[in-house]
Amino acid sequence: MGVDSFVSWLRDVAGSLHDNAAYLTELDSAIGDADHGANMDRGFQAVVGLLDETSFDSADELLKKAGMTLVSKVGGASGPLYGTFFLRFGTALAGVDLTPETIGKGLHAGVEGVLARGKAELGDKTMYDAWAPALDAYDAAVAGGSELGTALTAAAEAAAKGRDATIPLVARKGRASYLGERSAGHQDPGATSTTLILESAARTLP
Amino acid sequence: MGGMKKLINDPADVVSEALQGMAAAHPDRLRVDLENRIVYRKDAPRPGKVGLISGGGSGHEPMHGGFVGLGMLDAACAGEVFTSPVPDQMMAATKAVDAGAGVLHIVKNYTGDVMNFEMAAELAAADAGTEVLSVVTNDDVAVQDSLYTAGRRGVGVTVLLEKIVGAAAEEGRPLQEVADLAKKVNDNGRSMGMALTSCTVPAAGKPTFELAENEMEVGIGIHGEPGRQRLPLAPARDIAAMLVDPVVSDLPYQQGDSVIAFVNSMGGTPLLELYLMYNEVAQLLDRAGITVARSLVGNYITSLEMAGCSVTLLKADDELVRLWDAPVNTPGLRWGA
Image 1 (cartoon, rainbow over the protein chains, first blue to last red):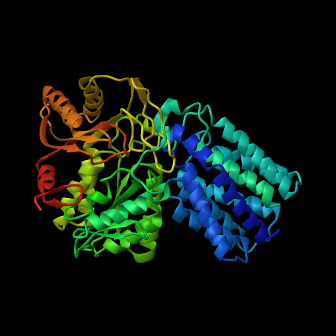
Image 2: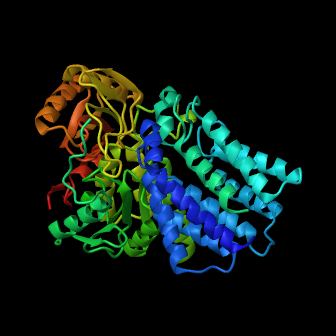
Image 3: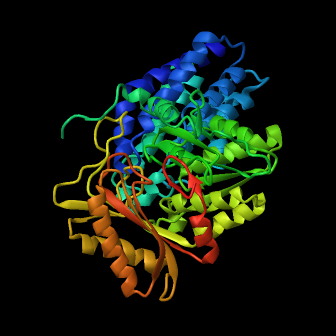
């Protein structure tokens, strides 16, 4: 695999977020401010614009530029959070061969960036509730000798479970936290977009 | 629920076309960078003056772009509707208004706003060596239990802070003093808001939440996010008490205190109702022995077309009242100049 796989991934994410923009916004309406779908769609359309006009020699350069684009175009909390994820993921891939192990290290670096920026903990009803089980599942699959595709599929499935598990939670971070108990009973939009991004990775990266 | 009924062309163009309108309406006072979506005071940067920048999602007009001008902000960064602006905008604004005296960022406490302004301050310091201090407003008493939330939201006090701190910066006070004053204003201000109707984000096309004819939402923020409690609709005097009591008991404001009292429309409530509400608020304060030194009544920090209001009190000493009275000339607030 090489940079082309990552280009396919980002294009597929853009398509998936575009198709799900109304759904993400609907989730955000219930416990946030009804902009998550539109913001993610706008950010990834800008990433597609970047892919259309620039060719990249390496995955790390591509991911770093995509991260900066998201920081610049998305706004809200999602911009700094997803932007930081792709920036750190890219930085971790600089100068290394792309293997299930190095990609796993990159994913971990990205999620550590999300945590540093957002200061969320597991169970706060945020995107981290999808990222954390996804990383665990990925690591376990790779440790068991799985191929990249199997590991990413396991990660996406675990993210989806983490996403579903946000429904009963009371939010402790972000705008949903203002609702207190009333945030329970709703699926977290950030955990939902994270799951879409990982499902897309399982489809396109291997 | 019907379709969206708004004076717009395309939902995607709302923010940029409104900024073009501000530029066209106020060429004497403002300069608008349409590319970066920044509203500048026309004569910024002012030599020797601390630069004041704020910004946030659009949909709260006249805040913040309408508060750019003499005696208030030097620049305001506009995000998408209800979405924080991005670090690039804040960095560009920071560099443009820095005249050597440093820059104060006035940030409302929302996760996105705080993260984007933090990134901008880090980048501006690393890039140009500009001295940047920040104040985060968090005056909304509807948000409790702050250990388990993102903290109290920045709402009405932001308007009063931009006016008062703007006057201090205009006097040529140094950055640290301006930042300390900003903190003092925030620490002495409290707010609470309520909604009679929801609002429709143009890109979403339908109301953010549903309220029945006989319901109201108490403890709302300014982004159409639902509040803490849905209650049966009540007379204005009861609603005034629901807003004033938690505000007064929170600081607390006590008998003998002097305040600036601010009754704000969420965007869709007419002044007739707003003055009726102010009357109720004034009576409650009078009964509590709290003196109103100055008042502000109108649409200043809004949530699109939401009907409803918020009440903000700011405990005011002679210094704050003097700075409140100082000349201001912005599209949204003007007196003495």
